[in-house]
Image 1 (cartoon, rainbow, N blue to C red):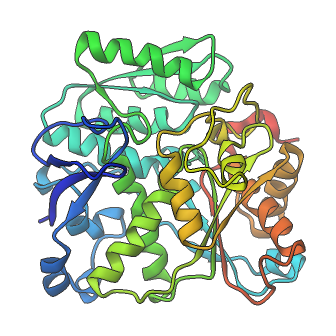
Image 2 (cartoon, rainbow, N blue to C red; image 1 turned 30 degrees about the vertical axis):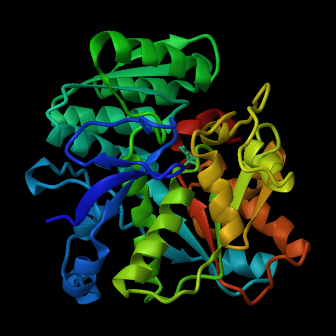
Length: 388
Ligand SMILES: *Cc1c(COP(=O)(O)O)cnc(C)c1O
């Protein structure tokens, strides 16, 4: 049973019917967000209900938008460990560093969370074909859940994406189109198919459900820290779904009476080769400009323009957080440190969070005794060409 009531535009506030299929806001073209009857949920959905529930993100199903459980798809996604990184902490002089290891999700990245929800919701709507432009992990995750649901899936990827990302989609039954261009060029091609064949477009924040899957990271961090949120969360930001999602989750949990008003300072980390959010944050802008010539080894961070830019920037500012750009060299070095100190085969995006922490520590923005959660958003396995 879900407390999902309606969708609301994150920008203009327009309300949309939860029983219809939506992509972006029909009024202003910005992302739609799922809203819940939190007043009723506060009385009925208490924390102790979580005890003895399955260790997947469906443990929070009351706060997820699938109305009938029979449409929920699961490959064991979510409820990943929040690991205390003691050896890493010692290395950089901190006592309370934790790594949320998202590489343990199905298809080895946290994209599984979002696509689990998007495809489950499509399943509930009776949708038969789904489509995505993706620079990597999102496509694999979509392919997996589409296979599980018996849907046809269409993937549009830049042709220079590392082979394992491409082959994973093919193995999972997707029809893959390789595009001579960047992710936004893939988006244009995918959109043609969406228009022509009526496929459901599951691009980042162009449908309202992926963010609901990603927000469960916020619920999990709260539950795993015994409802005492950390001081700082460092998140490798591409489209920003997880950051926006967690910020939304904290708000929901406060309204549910699960946590108080304390919030972590949210940090977005990007690569110097593609840092539109960092630039917009520093310039005090509400929206980010498109980043020209985006280039980074961290495929998940190669997003030159994000539809949810204003939501990312809002969360950073409301939380007294910040945005940091790090070099690809620091990203790889830091990923290697996580590997060797903690035994976690980190993705470069995960490495970026440690690179950012080191910078923030040096600048005095983070204090040695503060608690920090780093997001290792994927496993290093698909980036085989980076490891020497
Ligand atoms: C997609 C991706 C990101 C960026 O996630 P967003 O929620 O789009 O900001 C970070 N790391 C990895 C491994 C990814 O696949």
